[in-house]
Image (cartoon, rainbow, N blue to C red; front, side, top):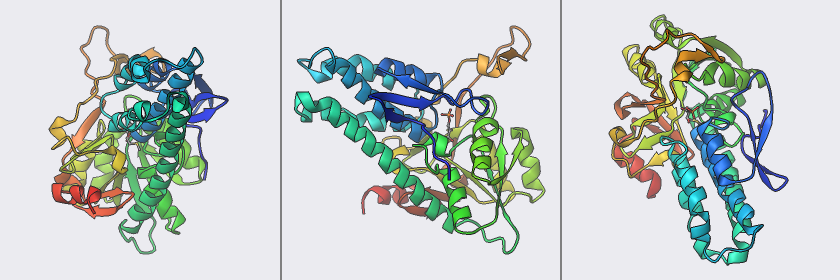
Length: 350
Ligand code: MRU
C-alpha cells in the first residue's frame, strides 16, 4: 500500500504534494504561513475533505511558529485571527476545514503562551494520526457489507477521488472501502469516473489505485448510466465533503446523478466518511453551502480553451445526495444501513 505526503510536517513547516500536477509530476510544495496554506487549499494543491482538515491543522501550527519567531504575542487569538480567517474562507463545503479550526482554536487560550506553537503542532499530528486510523476502520466496516458476487469479481464504481490523496495519505474513505475489500481477499474491479471539470477521477483515483495494483477502468462521467443499465456495476462507493444531520451527503458534482441512476437499477449506493465530515448543525442538505469555482475550470482543459468564447458558465463543485438514495453510510464507527437523523445522532451519543 502506497502512502503519500498529502499534508505533513517536514523541516519545521507544512509540506504538501501538489495534486494539481498529478499524475504527470510528483512535486511537493512547502508552506510557511496560514495565508499561504489557505491559498494552497483554495487552488487545490490539497483537496478532499479530510485532507483539507489535516492541511488546515498544520496551517494553524505553521502560522504559530511564524509568529513566535518574531516574539511571543500578547494575545495569541488576536495574532492568529487573520491567518485563521484566511483558512476559514479558503473553501466553503468541506466541513473538515471548520472542524479542524474548532479543534485548534481553544488551544490558543488553554495553553501556556510559550508552548502554543508546539501544542498546535501536536494537535495537528494527532488529527493526522486519527485520520489514518479512521480510514482503516472505514475500509474494514465498508468492505464487510459490500454485495456478495460469488466467484465473480466485484465491480465498484466511484466518483472523484476519495482516496489516500483526499485524506491524510493512507487508504482513503471510498477507496479505503475498496482497499479493505482487496485486503479481505475479494477480487475487485474499479470503474473510476473521470470527474469533470477538475478530473480527480482520471488524474488521481486512477493513479493511486493503479499504484496499488488494483484493476481500474476509466470512464467519462456520462458513461456511468449506460454501464449501470447494462448490469456492469455491482455497487457505487463515494466519499463526502459534508454529511448533514439527516444523512444527506454533499460530494463532488455528478454524485447525485449516479445515486439517482443507482436507485433506478437497484444498485447499492454507499457513502464513506469519517465523523469529522458530519455536520450535525446542518439539519439537512439544503443547509450545506455549495462552492462555485472559477469558470476557467469548465472552459479550459490542461490550460487550453475548449469552450466557445463569451459563453456563460456555471461551475458548482458539489451536489447533495438525499439520504433516501443512500443504501449504506460508513464511518469509523461502523456501517449504517439507510442513514436517518436518529441513526446519525447515535454515532455521537453512545
Ligand atoms: O473538490 P475536491 O477535490 O476537494 O472534492 C473532493 C470530493 O468531493 C471527495 O469525494 C470528498 O472530499 C471525499 S474525500 C475522502
